Image (tube, rainbow, N blue to C red; front, side):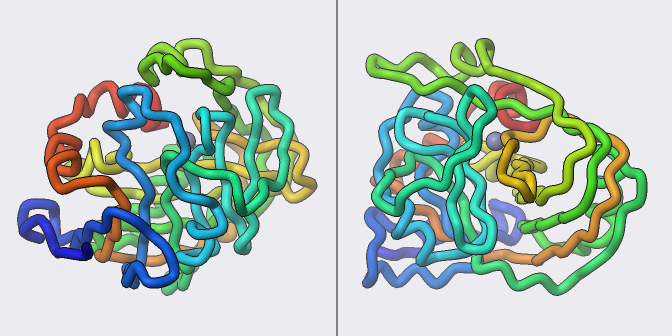
Length: 258
Ligand SMILES: [Zn+2]
């Protein structure tokens, strides 16, 4: 099943496609491919559904989480890493499943630099360069004076809602670190399917730290950016996709928006 499901005008010019399963013949050729729905993650659906090996067939740059919410997923140069709740980084096997991930075959068309920037300055520079693209994929590499990161602890059924888990998140600050920020921006209208607005993860070059990015400052970054409008979503049904669009956006912003 691979249908255009929602009028493009309803979702800020994003061309949204739906498929109930993914694999070699899934027909997903979209610029950005997503497994799972943010609304389901919010409700505590943490069981992995799609193997990372399959996710990596759809792109080499991405973010998300893994089975059981066992850390923050960062995909850089086609390799999937997970930052555990204690801050350690591990490459993950392609057989590990994910309940939520977004990935793209990164083909940037815009490049710029940020000097001594913090998160707001970085995002303002991205906004300046994004044009009218409803979806932006970002890769920014360089040195950072300090970056506030977080990850979450592995969960076991019965799963609790994400707001409860994130309330117990492990947060730390990495200083004088060189690494890569990976992120996406989706329209607010897609909140529930995705995280509306910006969502950034980080991975240090020495693979010693990383995680979901909350704040940073003193960053000298070379930024590359892709502008997209096609999103393929792997989700069980159209009904769940529609209900996802009515998810609690303020709760999503609270747990993932920064
Ligand atoms: Zn995140």
